[in-house]
Image (cartoon, rainbow, N blue to C red; front, side, top):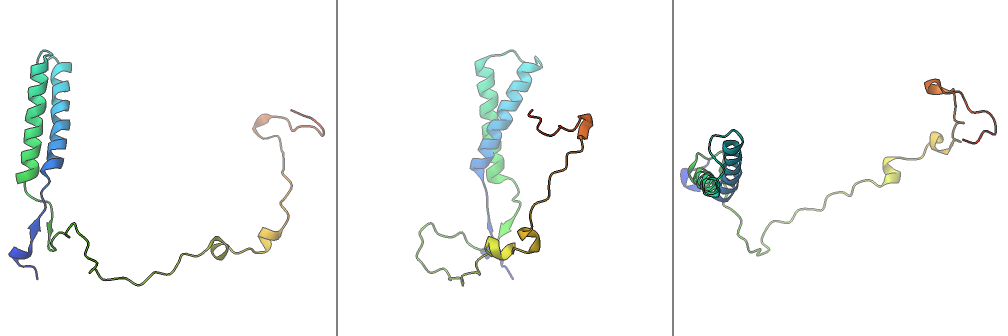
Length: 127
């Protein structure tokens, strides 16, 4: 059972800021293309900055999608993680596809039946 003090909420204001940048650029382009506002650099910059701020605030304070019940691993590795047993190696090509009688047989002669309406080439015809 997970107690409330063991639960950690992951927030992502950086990703929110990036998506806010995309939102701001999209809204700025929309406003210019559909002639809602005249094209001015100050208007475009203002709309993009507002988008970044809205996205970062949404990433920092919006409801979390998931709760994790384990603390984040530290960035320094101290070698105390449990070691796993090595897994069995995948089969080699020869093990996965053993040669059988079909692999040893001679390939069949190609059949040219003049498909697609083209006449079959005659013997010795070089095209």
